[in-house]
Length: 240
Image 1 (cartoon, rainbow, N blue to C red):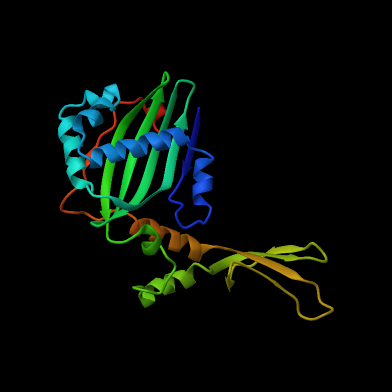
Image 2 (image 1 turned 135 degrees about the vertical axis):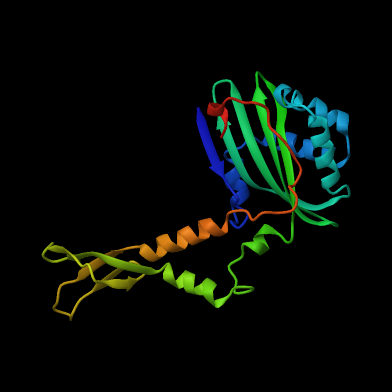
């Protein structure tokens, strides 16, 4: 079995090329067609394309209708693939496509899971969420809306403590416990005739910043949950 995860990659100029080297273009077209059928309110078509396990979930039709009402019905200005999660075994090919789209109603993101089994394609789940602005704009490296504390954390990520010093000429190495340096490493010498001393420190600042980022990414409680059609009861070893 093979599991491959990519995304979101919208910030990369060659993100589409990277994604389409891994995902099936036929599955991508199938997911887009299903998404369009949902926006058009074609409930019978949408139900007929669900995987048998998802179709058998109680009240799944109500979930499909909830997603339909949440999606923009008019024409889309743009829609592109920003992420993919593909899992393959000898009998199952399962891909979770994530798209970003824009319409007269604003920005949104949608996820469609396509499962191929015994030569037949199904949709195993679909979900949608509205966005205040594009992900490219939201994730841009900019000073806009950033406080002083935000940039202090960015600077902290460059700080390393303690570390190893290595004499390039003699090969002698030693540990420096009471050392703080920026960028996690350095190469210095006392003069033109002195040996180069290479230093590498423990990236404590980067680890603290990484932890802060992970905490910030935890979803905040909201009054409602975006509509989502749950996937079928697929065995755990087949989930990507």
